[in-house]
Image 1 (cartoon, rainbow, N blue to C red):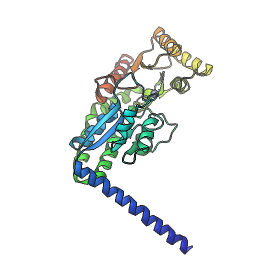
Image 2: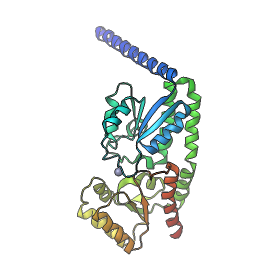
Image 3: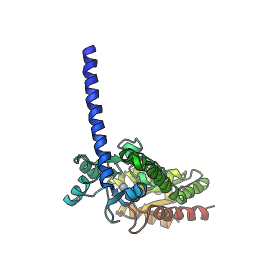
Length: 299
Ligand SMILES: [Zn+2]
């Protein structure tokens, strides 16, 4: 027994020793060349990271065009090289951008932060469209500030202040969500894909067509039961509105959207990726304003 404890103690010392050496290496390296490099899968996460790292680093996104889906993206060798030369890879996680997870893991110097698993402690199988919960962006900003503070303790107060600045920039979004929550009254809504689910839940709406939207997201045909329950929710006016992901089209989805139009069910148009030239806050406000208009007209 004692022998085992002794061996374990040695192992622990070795592990702690290596961890310390590795930690020292990273912090001295950054102190020397100054800039911390961060690469994110999408530009709204890069925007967050750039605000938090401020003058002490550079954050860039791999996907910057709104016609490329992070879920289907395949990195080029140039992208692989870029990730391997980066200090931090900021991924959505939960299977959304597996390619970035793989690239970061194959690089010794790149630290991988998966927002789903590492920041939110979620498991795979959870809806990965995490950025549509404003709370995710708040938690990620704080997590990144703490991480950067460990890497580069000299600028800890700046990273913490930058995270606060980012979080307060979200105020227009969070206050609109809170305002809309007062009028949602737990009403049922539908969505063509589970993209906007976290925002809908944050506003207090109840999503009634998970079977339908998940099938569409997976590229499958919804079951007849899922299809008929959504159709009758539309024709019986049981939903306050339907959220349509403009970036995907299928005949099943366009049939549903046309049925909604015929039955005067309002449609909220959202996109999975940020429209070119927009910022996270303006993007979310555009979507929330559509919900606000509907809520006001239904009062
Ligand atoms: Zn998606």
